[in-house]
Image 1 (cartoon, rainbow, N blue to C red):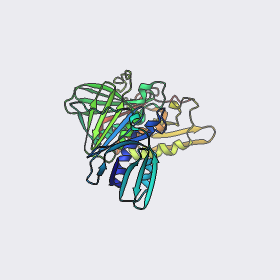
Image 2 (cartoon, rainbow, N blue to C red):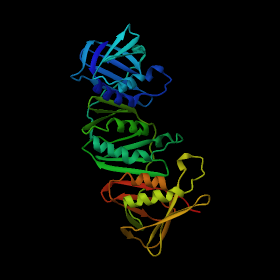
Image 3 (cartoon, rainbow, N blue to C red):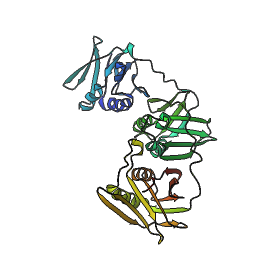
Image 4 (cartoon, one colour):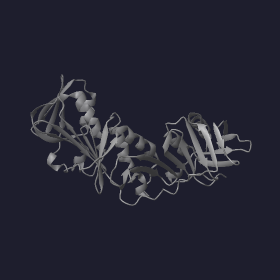
Length: 378
């Protein structure tokens, strides 16, 4: 194997490949990157237990003198990232060492046997679902933060994608909050899949600078996303995702509309003194804050901490539709996460009772709903 390539081209593709590279693995071979060089192309592959990524490089700067294959340690990325040479020459010495030549620098890495690298199946099926990358990014950003970080219910560590009659509903919940995004798509077969949150985080990073269409191919236990010269494949979570369709009500006794940024800033300030829940389960470790609509129709956000002190702020809603007063306690982190998912400048909180879930919607985010379970206040 012997090739020369533009460093920037190589580094851009290595950054994509890094999304599937594990820090640790029971199979040491998977901590490396497989390089497979044909007479015309360079293929690079990485894989962990959830994700497999492959890039195909046939850039004009690629000069292949000798085909071949090898598996290089992940440290290869760090070297390419640090060197300043415009061109990089890579070649194998006695099939045991990868030599990296860059200007006056030379680096040598011990390589692994490519025959030990598991075969990766990136077979694209027919009839992909095409989604604009910006639409896909927005769906992931609007929901993935609401997934569970606990493995007690593995299915809740993923985001559920369901298509029924060309309406794509994307839902994430950790049992204490819920995020739902609904969009219309081109005619496509119905499906119901749940994608691991870590996979979506890495896919989001991989398509961060991409603005075209992403082709999605569905198989029984995995999803393949194709964009540019990249194949990004993830396993799907087994099990039935809970039916959340009946959790979101359409009618609320109280609707409070706020300037989003003002609400965020007030909650952030008050939460500095908020008490932490003592529960050992990280899923319900809140920073507890109370929102109260008073009889005079003023709105107060407050917290009481017996060890530190108290805090309260009065907010001026831009709109109030309410029959009477109400007070509801909640996790400030949950509300802040929800608010930051909206592009709208104004958001509306829909409340029913102190112990009933409340929702957040935005004036310019008609297809996005955030739901939060209240915390019982002492």
